[in-house]
Length: 116
Image 1 (cartoon, rainbow, N blue to C red):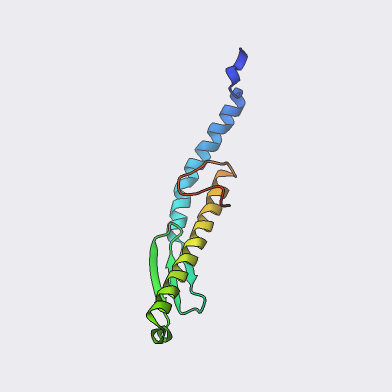
Image 2 (tube, rainbow, N blue to C red):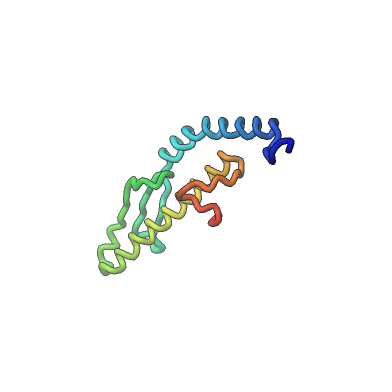
C-alpha cells in the first residue's frame, strides 16, 4: 500500500509552487483586466461601447447619424456593440487566465473551459 495512490512528494511540492505562483500573479491580472478598455462596435459602426477586461461597462459613443434610424435599428445596433465588447472581453479574460495558470484546467466558475 505504498503511496496510497497519491502523487510523490516532488509532484506535490511542484503543484504547491505552481499554486503559489498563480496566487501571486492573480492580483496583477485582476488589476490589468480592470484597466483594459475593450471596444465593441455595431456592424454599421453607428454605436461603440467600451467595457473593462472585467466586463464593467465604461462608456458609449453614438454616431449622430443613427438618430435617423428606426427605434428597432438603434436597439439592434446597441445590442450588437454590447455583444461584441462582451465577447472580446470574455476571450481576453480566458486567454489571460490561461497564460496565468500555464494551461491548467481549473474549471473556474464563469469561465467555461469547453468554450475555448
